[in-house]
Image 1: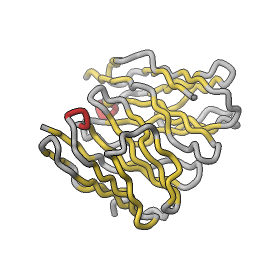
Image 2: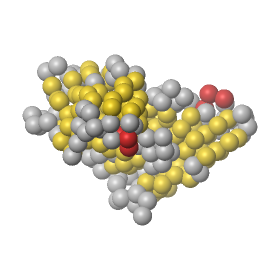
Image 3: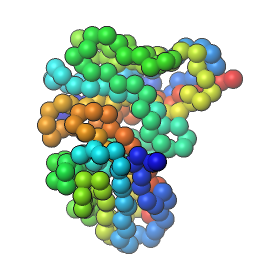
Amino acid sequence: AQTVTQSQPEMSVQEAETVTLSCTYDTSESDYYLFWYKQPPSRQMILVIRQEAYKQQNATENRFSVNFQKAAKSFSLKISDSQLGDAAMYFCAYRSVRGGSEKLVFGKGTKLTVNP
Amino acid sequence: DTAVSQTPKYLVTQMGNDKSIKCEQNLGHDTMYWYKQDSKKFLKIMFSYNNKELIINETVPNRFSPKSPDKAHLNLHINSLELGDSAVYFCASATGVKTQYFGPGTRLLVL
């Protein structure tokens, strides 16, 4: 079974600075998807960024980018120019491409605080 | 327009009661999911339906029964509620292996 580990329960960053959230995963599959979701205090789960394992190029979405290291099974999220609105829980998630296994497997989350 | 909606958003009830949570998606997706987020914020899959067919059932007590009347709806019925059922329940939908979109969550509190 796949597992996802987020080793940083909490992180903090100064506004306008850069922060990196760590995520490692364990799988025997060669093709899969990885995601970062954000959960602000409103509780809504919001997709931040997604990476297909077969793509070598790291995904980017505006101020958010990932460092995907397939051999190391590492998928970190970098937030540049941090803003107060980035404060939230961030969840790393894995999704198999095998039929019948399309569930998301989540890490335990990292709580990000942004200091003004 | 809300893509994935859940009702109710909050549910407070007594132990032993039966309750239902409804989920609807207007994205045209063929797969819907229920996830449970516990008090420590850990999210775990409960069920998945594809075109009204149950495809994932993750060791959930049989007091929980999902029902999918059509591919746009997935409801969750819980019998004989227990204190440990208190959590936030999220509905999500997707097509194939594409991104899952989540509803706003239903916070259930069992007293």
